[in-house]
Image (cartoon, rainbow, N blue to C red):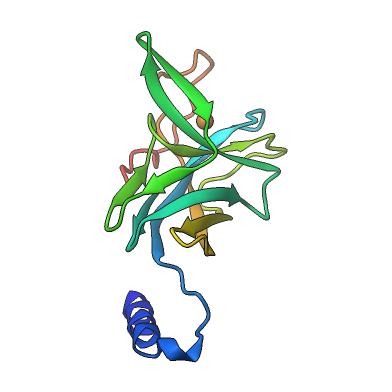
Length: 166
Ligand SMILES: [Cu+2]
């Protein structure tokens, strides 16, 4: 599929006089969401974003979730703090990894548990230096992650929580 995409980009570059539709200059890979427990209202979504040209991430959303925000996490006075940010700049050629403990999408006000193996559509909106906007849609896979500490209740052993991704 990436071959086809590269071919399309090359074709669009070669045929630019044909007012071709704006093609995304951004690739999103390895998008995943941390699975939630039934009462859990929020979780994170993570991915790798690669921009061929400098772009700004200006919007995030999902047709399947009530609230999606862009967040950053950073150390502040030796405490990890999370806050919402409106935009995120990517330099040309940069691959930015949204990952636990860093930038992430925050999925909030969840009304149901997100189960491992589910696929959830996420949409990112980018703006380039000319102000042209493009959208990238991805299907993020929900993955179970080993909790940092075992809960005090009786342990349920799910044997599939050890994947560290590819
Ligand atoms: Cu967050």
